[in-house]
Image (tube, rainbow, N blue to C red; front, side, top):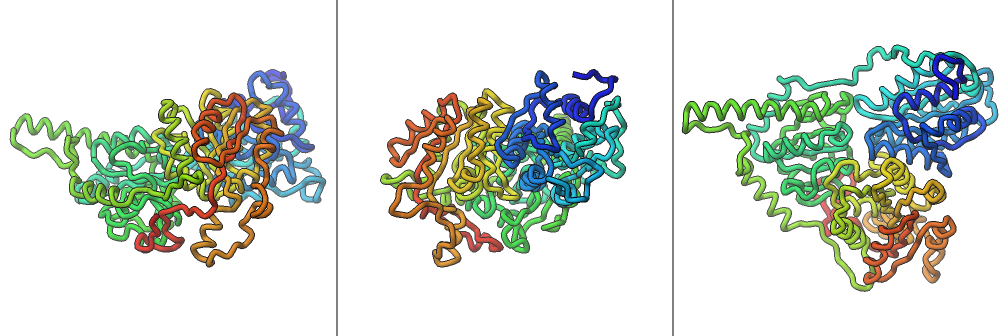
Length: 598
């Protein structure tokens, strides 16, 4: 390997930059325009693990799984043209879900850019709107600066994807690199902290409130604010409801956790949001799957919105107190102000016995007792429920049993769950309970089917001693099923619990609800009089993975234990009824008054 301060190829410089930025794993699929980078990766094999996906989209989702499970930047590499365009879905997904990813693509040599050369696409133009930033490197001397900026941009402020397009002649050019160049990012100021004045206004709003609620999202996890949120709730006694990306950001088993809100959230969370007089929106973006009809969402309450991204403030829903700032720092500062006030109040009580302590001082009783009692009533009247059956495995039951077995093994904090997109995704969010951040992630904003398996592989590469499970549906699983080969060959023993209903379940649900049950290309089988199709057990075994099929309820527990104990990748094909719907459900664009209950 060439030494620093010695002439190196652009490809070697690029890979050295990855090492310098602490990258330990890359997900890379080679091709003509990226061959020099792959040759360089072989020279750095003692410092950097290269995992070979079986499709570039798989590699992009693996980089996301790595990033979502660690909080570090995920790195994926592809060749030009079709290789690069196969990253498009992954980059759009990372942009919408705020995931730090650096995607590196080979490009045709600079003299032929724009001539429709073999395997050429203008990937920077294609990806401009779905990345946080983008680079076409035209000078090899710029590589260290570009990589330094790419990692900084991807990981600071609101995290997101950055694409770096590197022409083949730039990869081959030999030069002496400066590995610590100054960055050139005028106007990019990602570090934002809420002012004390803003935060005191928040506390004033809390004091004036009788029915407050915290609506917490993925920003809690992205900023590492889970301990701060817990401490803030312990001091204030305010109940918390979470978005699909916020799950794990506040413990599911905490008395004040109302679980998920929104379209398929709990009835009691949606009732509480609707009745609250103060909504503390922390690290969220008021997505339509949460709000339903925006004008009716939380309309009885004052809204405090704290987020790192100024473009999200007042974008979908106007805030009474809009605050741009890092949510972790904001919560730290709020806690500090509360603790200062508590200490001051205690000193006053010592000096003047009989004086009242302020309402927000930590106390054994909750200052919002009446509000909490109301929420408890809703929680008792409207729990998550489904009609269980003895003659079939219900999808909700399968997820519940998976969670219970892992809980009984005391492995919840050491288990990561990913999903595809559809009914199984929402059932997983409802019936598998998360107490720890970065143990759950899913394609939320984009809703990209095929996410579950490769994301699980990326997480397994980052956490070799954790159990990683993809709860998937037969439609989503088939979209990147080829990554079983990657999992097997790279010795990444991910588990797939496949809820197989032979249909595109979520689309079927909408057909049943809104299109009089007319089936419009949502059946995935080979005929209702035929065996379930395809034969996922045979396919998995063809990839040399463990596999088993379950149709009877009494066989489920044993099969789940076998899956969890497997030392190789494992597919558990669970046949479930296709007529089941994800409930509760607030139809798109509707309000809590239109909620369809189980």
